[in-house]
Image 1 (cartoon, helix red, strand yellow):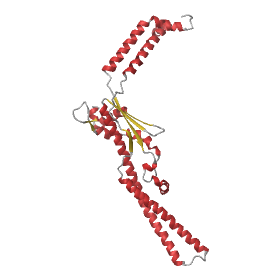
Image 2 (cartoon, rainbow, N blue to C red):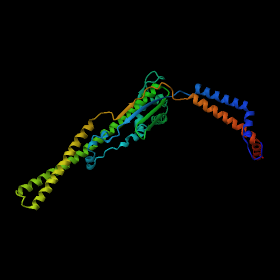
Image 3 (cartoon, one colour):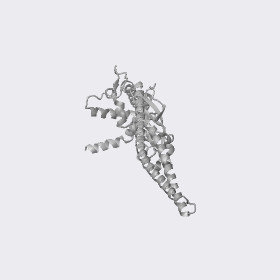
Image 4 (cartoon, rainbow, N blue to C red):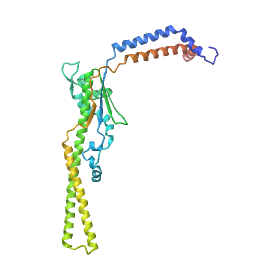
Length: 323
């Protein structure tokens, strides 16, 4: 070392050069071990991907969307455009994944179709324990993301078999669609029931207003000569007009809600369905090899450099601890 308290570049690089054979040996051995592990022990995984275009406009999410203002006035809620952000939570939910796990799929490892409990070898515990472990495994392999600008949802699933990965992911998408459609129909049913009750109330109010206007006109045949009578008649007529408008709009909403109830359309628009991937997603052998090559090289070089610079101090410190 050129100075007791100053470390120069030459002080650092010299021990590295002198120990180049040992560093090279360590680097080669570690790299070879990584190659052996990559090819002999790490299983192959294939990633299937599906892209979804969820319906985010309120006039697509609800049959009442075109009457949003009247629906809000009547107390009927209209879904917002943020439903796409719920998709990751839905596909990872126990409700969705339980059905996916229980369904049977073709697998290269088995002669007959099997459910994922059997595929994941989760059959030795209690049913609840087996399902819990299968849920943990599939959630580790499943990924979902939402593009903040376009609301496009991307789902991906990694499994050891390419075809199985695509089949399971397509089933997840189908269960997502089933969940959204079921909720949509349920909401339409609740809306229809509420509108039906409100429609009966408004119909009674309309009849009462019409009866009041009719009785007034029967009792007051000539109202032109009396400003007060004209004012009363105009108020009664406006009441009938308002009740009629509300009644007509509620009647239209009621018919639309009935249509929504019986709809069986696909809510989730699939841009790209999952297909069996051609190339494996992991292990990434080249990336692993290069990563450990550089880590072993720089790690061993750092070790020899530090040992040369501070070896004596480290030895004295170790003796102090032992003594």
